[in-house]
Image 1 (cartoon, rainbow, N blue to C red):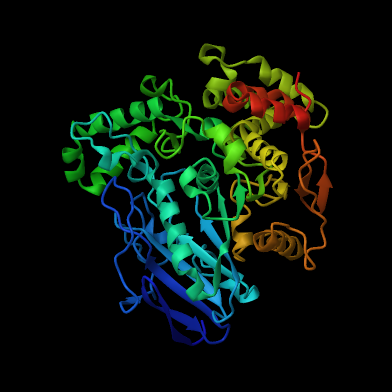
Image 2: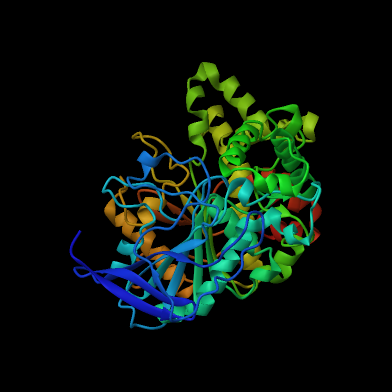
Length: 533
């Protein structure tokens, strides 16, 4: 690293003292507090004023979770007061900058705004390389609470009051709090509060898309880039399921009141959280009726309304630009131990276990879907590949298609991608796994061809700037979803603009989706894009 200097920025919430790298001109402001919150309470503003000087030269505390310190290369402190953000920019005197806000993933139980150490020794979510090459962009990476700290239902405990009414969706409200800080302060860094793009992967993407279901989040961002998870169906938790999960949690803690629970040490909460994670996804009778991922956004009618899907279609998506998609081999690693033909029956059983509500007749599913699905591409894929595709489609790809169709139907810019890069999962012939795009976007280590990486980055950054992934620096012509066509950019050795990927598979699976079954308006939209019997 070259020599560094000090950079001071005065905002309404304080004077932040960050670092600037003299060789590249990039500036970093780390650990900026954007909110404060007591356990299981909604975040509030930090009560500081412009004359208060705040050291922003080192990372702030991480949310509580299981952390392997060796993965980071630096000591990582965990603290329940973890609502801080990192901000990266260059030429901060330049105004009107696009603001890209990265929301990390981690299955709703892990993640922070640092990111594990990469091969070059840098933190994964260090945004300096992005802004070094794009001086008109600011990158903001906030922490938000995860696990039981970010989503728990306290309503059945003694001492529950309105003070805790938002406890099911604190993770999402933390992001809202960060966006409010951005709206109030970002102009001091050269940013435009009306040019905010959220981008994130996995649970981060699910949380971004959940903001589209939340009336309170309206007006806080202009564009979204959703990578490999979407707030619908299995990625949303019903209010009753949140009670089931939380009651088991507090039963194992031997507490009956909010006061007792608040007195417990964080490490005790983490230990019991890890215990109940083992029982998730219908693994034991105590969670046999719970089909959503633990600690996912909750339909609580306080933050996310009961009519969330109608709200999204009628209001939530309006005026917002969308880019979203999935990777070809998202969850392939779960099937790796069954890849030999003699073990394919075990792969099928695992698929049934993971997707009981969709495929198991004992849980209201349709087992015939598996054989019908396998027949769709019989000449192009083995049964084993069909099982892998089916898991990836049910959990992720149907969400991408659903969001893409809704945005397009309501007149917003809507673009879909399908990342089919080979060899990015650790082996020469492996399909593109969950999260493969992250090091590409942050310009870190990747085995992907450099020109391909450049084109992916340019598409993302161009979209953040204008709502259109095309640009002078991007030779691939992306077409919007619309006019009944699910235009999708398939990204492999080359960029190929398709009219849709595996649409026959989608025609089988979309009718299994909860929102398709319960929302007539959504069913009509689907039928305009995909032939469904």
